[in-house]
Image (spheres, rainbow, N blue to C red):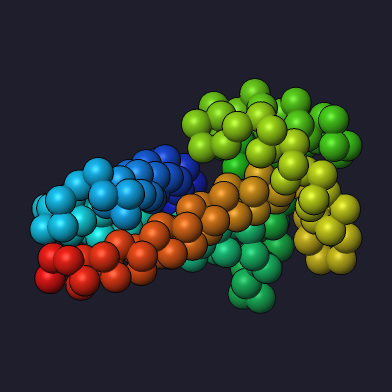
Length: 172
């Protein structure tokens, strides 16, 4: 578990950077700020592919970290896991939208990938649902990060398709 906790957030930053680079290049390409056969088109595709790979890995690790406890686990495993997650700031402790917002805005990783208004909008949209059922409010930070990366990935995929049409029509 220590290895997963050590690198999950490093991968979040790298994934965010790669997807944003892909989006920026695809947008420039679509707006014809780059020539039809520009090597940046291929670079953006590689950024997207690598970013998507990081996203898939992050999602898998998040499920391991925050998912159900395996049935063969020792009795104190869940308690130790919760303590380790809290110590590594993977989960949050706030119980109200205001406390969560304050805690999330003070988090350096969240500040790197989301604006304060995006954090507020996310909490407004998901606070209630994250508090209900089997979901744990403490996991809202990871959910927010995953949703943010998923949005970036979907946007990059849309732009890739548009750029591909231009590439096929003009360059390739």
